[in-house]
Structure formats: C-alpha cells, structure tokens
Image (cartoon, rainbow, N blue to C red; front, side, top):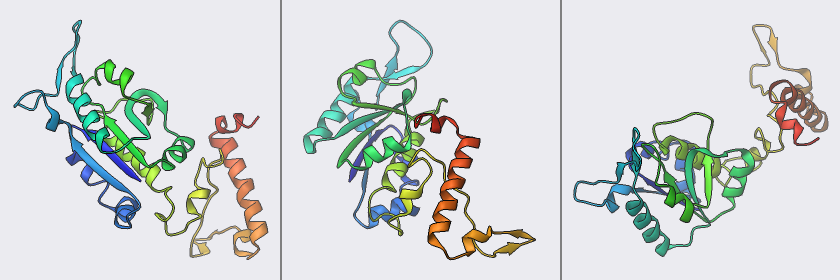
Length: 227
C-alpha cells in the first residue's frame, strides 16, 4: 500500500512514521508513506498557499490552485483509490472505515490547515472526508498520523501476530476484554483463574462475555447497531 500526504508541515509528520509499527511496515515494504510539501506548488516565490476569505471573516483559507496542481500532478503518477480530506465535519473515523481503507492500494490524503480548504477542492477532488473526533486541531497533520496508523497496522504482515488485529476493540462492534500478564499474583491482585486454566474454549467464552459486559457498561451505543 502507498499513502501520499499533502501538507504544509511535512516535518510534523516525519516522527510518527519513523518509529514503532509504521517504521516496521515500511521497512518490510508493506507500506509506503510519502510526504509532499504543498509549498512546492505555491502560487508565487514567497511560498503562498493561502489567502483571505471571500466575504470577510477571521482566518486564512488554503487556495485552490496549489491543491489542484498538487493533486493533479500526483494523480498522473498513479490512480488513487480514494482522495481523503481530513476535516472536523467529515465522517467519523472508526474501525470499519480503517478496515475499508486498509484494503486499498493507493490513497491520497489532504491535510487541511488554517480555516480549511477552498470548498471547490472538496466538491471536485475529494472522495472521502474523515474526522477523528468532535474537536478542532490546528491542522490535519495529527489526524493524518492517526489515520495512517489505524490503517497501516491492519496490513497483513505488519503485526508480529497475524491474528492480533482481529481481536482489537471495535472489530466486531465490541471493546476488547481485560488483559493480564505476569505475575499471576501481584500485591494480592490475582489474574482470573480461567485465564490460567489452559482451556482455550473456556478462555474464549470468558473473553467474549467480558467484551459484551464491558461494551454494555462503557460503550452501549456500539450494541445498538446489532439490535
């Protein structure tokens, strides 16, 4: 999989993709992440990519011309399955969406900044609009890091345990069950006996029961979709 990201702050994204699972995914050749500085397509020698809003109002807006030129140039090099714009009013990122994107081959991500992008970019180029939560960030870069991490870890071969991602929270509309590791008894706080039983069937049943209980207690809205 290849993910291209258009941003005015590429340096902000260098660290998240240079460590841990994302570094491993790239080292294995399973994922490519390419950062593109929008100022390469600036409208003048000063690197301008934003301008004042028509109609007045506080804050600058990312201009059409640089984003169109960037998107069209990159699109001549490969066909993108989706062009994603990160915005607070987009569809909420969830595990189902991450699964969907993880099956694609080429994704182009546009990071908004300032007051956002000229609406014509959204109308004529963007195919998916994604939000990571009902709050506002300074730009789309941190959201892009979250999106790529959520997608990248689902690519087969990225995780050491191929089945690990299948048991993540939200994969089946349930949150994950509690987990424990050694020692089995710490300060009198003991691991549930069932997990020490060595009986896979009983352990699976316990985990399913715990997932249902925890989801009902903490995220009951997830269960409503199954009713």
